[in-house]
Length: 330
Ligand SMILES: NC(=O)c1ccc[n+]([C@@H]2O[C@H](COP(=O)([O-])OP(=O)(O)OC[C@H]3O[C@@H](n4cnc5c(N)ncnc54)[C@H](OP(=O)(O)O)[C@@H]3O)[C@@H](O)[C@H]2O)c1
Image (cartoon, rainbow, N blue to C red; front, side, top):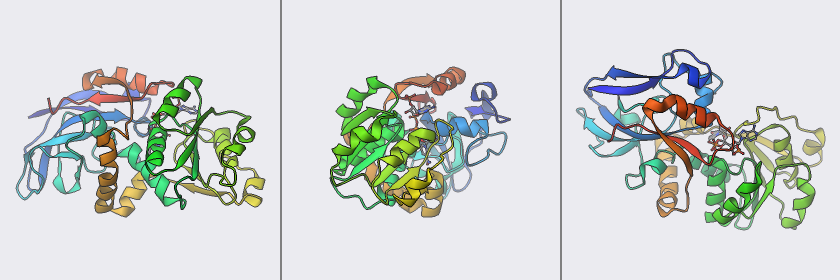
């Protein structure tokens, strides 16, 4: 059978280097399945991966796509997955293609009942938010968490997952028009990320200053988040959208005992193993199914329109994720 596959032969500007090709794929061998892909988002990490600036270097030629969902349509001998099961492809297998022949043992089961667009995005952003809210501070209901890039996919998941746990969120965004939307989604406070922030907010939490700050931007924005933390609070850096280095004033470390940590989902998944990852997914899936955890989609493109989709994903001030409809599952 043939498959439509997005590929790049050299790293560089995504729109210039990614092409869609038709390739022959063989029948599944022992332990393998054919997965018909449904949908995949274009995440910032995908753009970095194609550009050669991600934490993992692609083995060229490479198929992009760090997450997405598909259905098993054919199973080789000795496979436990059944035809119709929804899965995430094994780590390292790019998702931007209509069909893939992969090792069944590396496939992560995904909730079959979710709409394909939410199932395609249930891995990277929700699990990143979930882990960061669990692994870095002992948070009790009523505690405050502060974050920048609050309207990002991860930021929205943080707001929604925090609310489900009874935590409160202080949220920084770049655009005023996002404030009502995030408040309606469950954010406790939303402000424009700017110079006057710390003074304006300190009265919010009384004697319970935030223990956890989440930074996806870097530069001055990261320092504003760090400046809002209580003594011995933890700043977790997981993204660097501004591409600005984090230069921490000595006083934040000496007088406030600021703790600096980093998080990378890929490393967490690798060290935790598939059972732990599947367990985390089982915890977030019901929230996604109930509508309490949603990532908005700004636009959907077919694989044949990959250049337009990449151009849209590179734009700032988008209204949500750019999703690829992969066409494998019809
Ligand atoms: N470490 C991990 O494991 C992990 C996992 C997931 C994501 N991430 C990282 O987390 C970040 C957010 O990812 P996502 O998928 O949630 O992103 P997303 O949904 O595509 O949203 C991007 C966000 O970045 C903001 N932004 C863009 N350029 C910016 C700039 N120059 N300065 C400040 N903010 C800027 C956007 O604000 P506007 O809407 O105003 O443009 C938006 O809030 C990315 O850096 C991504 O690589 C890391």
